[in-house]
Image (tube, rainbow, N blue to C red; front, side, top):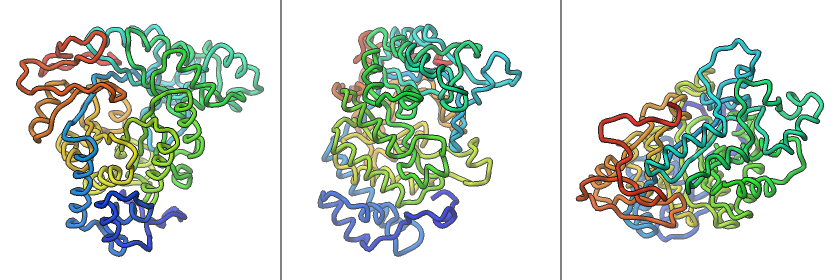
Length: 456
């Protein structure tokens, strides 16, 4: 675990159980639905001893890899996608994040220099259209909580009517900023162009799109869907245990708020993903409690298409700068998190390995620990890079085919929702996307070259 003792924050939840590792492993191998105690025993390789037992760890990884084979076979999938983050302006103050720039620096009267950006809807549309012409068919958009962002014109009017709106509802009118981000609905309409699948609006963004009103999450997601939103990313989850959220992101929505937003997205017919961001101040019990909440959500909705573990990247974050954490998760912890996710989440087929978080070598290792998806082409990835990530921002189809074939698995292009999957023959002469409206198999960029990104 990261260099934070279980007792430093006096957490109520600690990794202690009455279960044994042997019983938990037996339950996992038999395919029984795991309890929280089972999960804690597996992810710790036994709570009766300190540290991770390597022999036990390998037994957990083997059980997870076998389950992966039973559920999804030997395919390793990836998607042709682009990240288009609209703005870095934010003042939520999450201690794990270095993506944001203080929103006051974006105001016209500010003299603060910053490296952030805000895109207009027209600029977002231009980025997405250019990507679509190259064969990209998914755009993922996760942005800062800009105070001038509102759902639509009606929302602007409501927010402007609050007394001391900047303090009470985190709102300032667009006229106070150098660049107007438009409304959420305008950005949705702009990015859903050219047959692109738009994957956007986290629960935290959905809260921002309803702040200061009596609107429900369901109403917000319905309007977003009507404006072109295709599916919702289950980021902003971090750890779905409030005693952890109170430490790392006290200004964010709480656990129930995240769950309410996601359930609303499913109610209006949106597919969604789910995530966990681990390896900071939480302990192993928190990780399993998080998995339990995701599993329960999937039991209720059936709308989660994939689970995405995100290992905390620490170097440039406030948690590290303030001496709260000294490192992120270890390789052993990463492997066990993937494996136990596969075993515990018996109602979610797809588990992702993030090469942006783990790097190529460890990312490939995760594919033998229970994961079956290897992210996407991305083309631009600001969030992890700003936190100190060192593993790149884009990936070609040719690289995917080479790496996946090298470990004896079948490379496969997929749609965002996994409803279309195309196996790729490694003997083909060139490799490029074929599942999008403008995809004809042309490589996204030549091997050895750096592509233009969403922020160029």
